[in-house]
Image (cartoon, rainbow, N blue to C red; front, side):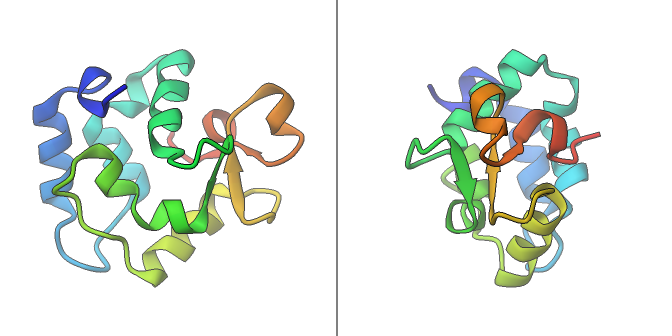
Length: 118
């Protein structure tokens, strides 16, 4: 599933444009701009699955670095500093990865309930 099937293309472009400059990424503002904040938990899970490139059920630091490219091929890579700050905010149990839900929640932080979208 492509991100454009879940989110409006104009919202994705607006969000990516807002954070083109290195060290400017703000995950809360980005998710608000793309419309993720208003999505149902089920659709947030679909977004998670698009971003979970290796299909491990987790978004690890290396995947997080390329998170903007998950929204559009034109997205930039996050800097190491931005990636670490994002992971630190989202990884509530300190295991270095962000999980999605249910069974996996016991193995890692929950994407929907713990990734600070709100």
